[in-house]
Amino acid sequence: MFGIIVAGLARRRERGIPPFTLMSCDNIEGNGDVARRTFAAFARLVDPELAAWIERGVRFPNCMVDRITPVTSDADRAWVAETFGVQDAWPVLCEDFVQWVLEDEFGDPEAGGGRPPWERAGVQLVEDVRPYELMKLRLLNASHQALAYAGILAGYEFAHDATRDPVIARYLRAYMDREGTPTLEPVPGVDLDAYKSKLIERFSNEYVRDTLGRLATDASDRIPKWLVPVIRELRASGRRAPLSASIVAGWARYAERVVAGEALPFRDRQEDAVRDAVARMAGDPLGFLRNPDWFGGLPDDDGFVADFTASLAAFRGSDDPRPELERLLAGPAA
Figure 1 (cartoon, helix red, strand yellow):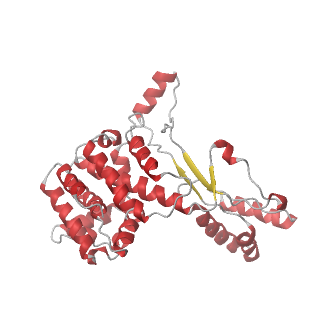
Figure 2 (cartoon, one colour):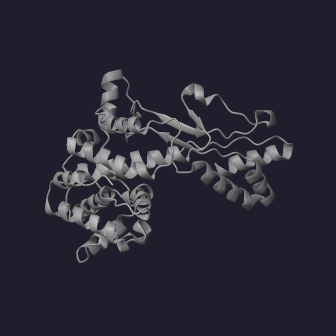
Figure 3 (cartoon, rainbow, N blue to C red):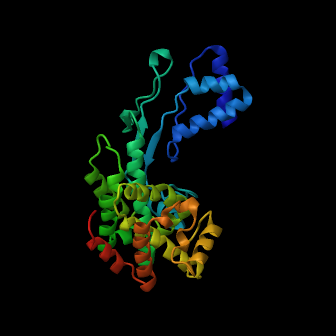
């Protein structure tokens, strides 16, 4: 892919044709910026002057895409066959919600830039995608982590069943309102209260049949990217983060039960590191936190540590996480 695209850009440069725009359609944070660095690095190995031309003239708009699309299951294949009479070995099922926010960074049409009329297909064109990206990462993605561990510890398998538990639903909304939202930048054109209510509705969609096991996959990548920044920002401003701390404690307790051999869904690319973290927990209440790649200096933050250890002790002391969630919900909002 890199060779083909860079070769195409080189051909345009040779012929004096303005470069095309490289628009990423993946789910990587800052995907346009990542693409710019990657393609320029590749081109630099071929021709440093070409790399400079790419960095100077090629547009790489960032975008944010949001649609829950679980992994295809045998039940999905059977449903498609029964409902539509189609034998599809890999149907892709998804929710009815879709959001695509795209930076309007395509260059001057008079100079060979321009773009298709994306807005006619429902795409939201914006000057800066970052506020929308933070909204998704810190409200949707981080809430998915809260839902995964609270739900699994409560004995649920599917996201919609866990979200329909009123205690868990209130817990998710409390995290969004009390801890996620205060770390966001202004999001032009978005009603955050309506957005958060819609998230709970989406998580409750029984037809998506999203599994909590999928949400808990690769937590060692997800929690440091989506939740830990929320904790750091709150703590830097002098605020407590007990709900976020409970999400981390829920992950720790879930991992502890997995390592103990319980039949829980588990998949993590850093499985060895997760097992090492659980092993440290045996003799150190903060053992799970002592991975600087995941948590940085949080083990030295007394306020966070107090909240984390309180929730971890509660989760260890009961097979039902809901009493601890109720305690957190009854706590102060700030």
